[in-house]
Image (cartoon, rainbow, N blue to C red; front, top):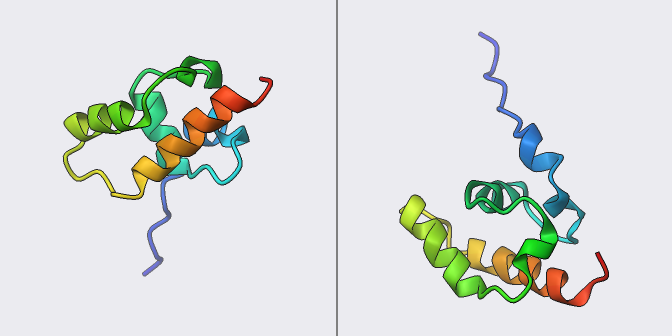
Length: 81
């Protein structure tokens, strides 16, 4: 029997969020699910509030997701996009 292929999240992989160094694909998917489409939309946002919104959507949110939210907001505020 052949092993199951993993589903590839092409939308997350091709999202602008993957231009952020050290960004994970699940974190990019989370931002897309929260209706963020561009990096600049994260400017001035609170990473903890974004993570809290994500936890409301998905109760089993991984704890390391907050780290990626902080990385994304920091990148949005400190890089010329």
